[in-house]
Length: 130
Image (tube, rainbow, N blue to C red; front, side):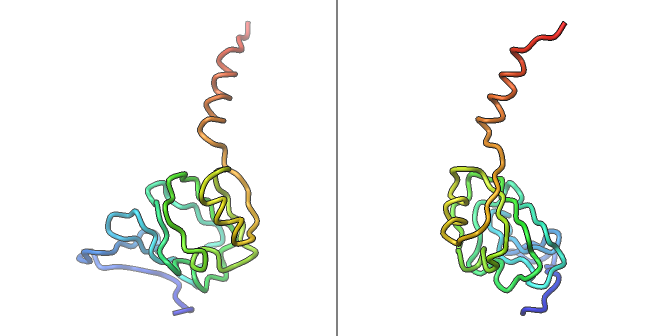
């Protein structure tokens, strides 16, 4: 349904859950569907998500940027995640998400990796001020 703006599930649904109008499986590991006509331009994928269902973002025209800070993403269906060639994907350099975004010819920006962050903290701790 291309005009879908919100996704709401029943509390009694045993398979699916809606959080902030986004549909997930009950375990919250899989993002099942983002509303195609949702009014969100920038979306940060929660850390608990490790896969995207086929067609999870299909038909979405309003999404401009998606932040995927999770290195453990196991599965992305390119046709579902990247329908918009103007979409900016913010991901961790060297991650599978980066590879999939490049295959989809998308614009990419990068999150700092954990190792980069730890190195910066280590460098700062060696500097003493009087």
